[in-house]
Image (tube, rainbow, N blue to C red; front, top):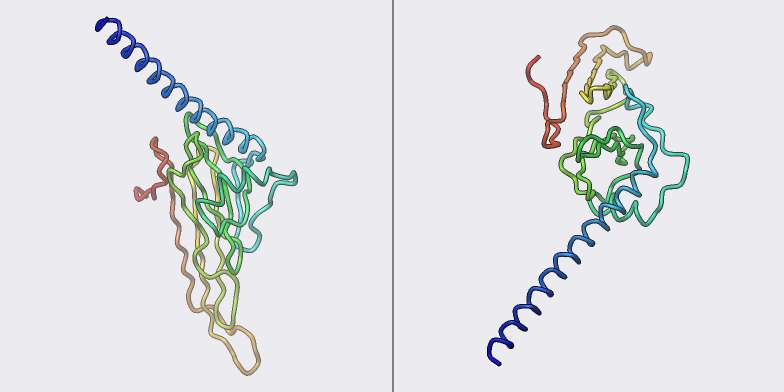
Length: 194
C-alpha cells in the first residue's frame, strides 16, 4: 500500500509539472503571436529612408489595432506619438521606426525581440530645428539598406541686422555627423571608427 501511495504522488506531481510548463509555453506563444499580429499591420519602411526635422514622418494610412498599439507601444513610452513602420525583421529582432512629440516630431528607432520587449532605442533630432534671428538649425536622418544609420546636425550662425531684420553674413557653420549600427544583440551603437 505504501508503494502505491508513493507512485500515485509521483505521477500526480509529474503531471502537474508538465502542465505548468505547457501553460507557460502557451502564454509566451500568445505574446509572440499578438506582437507578430501587431507588426504585420505596420507598413515596411522603404530603405534607404531619409528625413529631416522639418518633414518627419509619414504614418500608416491603414488603421492599426488600437488594443495592440497600446499593449506594445504605450506601456514602454507614454510620449510615443505614432508608429511609422517596420524597418527590418532580422533573425529574432524587429526594428521599428516610431516618433515622439516635441516642438517638432522626433524619430526614434526601436529594436525589439519577438515578444515586443525593447532591446534598445535611439531618438534623433535632439537639437534645435528651424530658425530665429542669427541662427538656423537643420537635422537629417538616414537609415541605409545595411541598417547603418547616419545622423547629421547642421547649425548656421549669422551676423544679424536687428534694425533692418536680415542676415548680414554667415559667421560660423557647425556640422556634426554620427554613424550608428545595430550589433548582433540588438543594441544601437555609435560607430566611432571614422
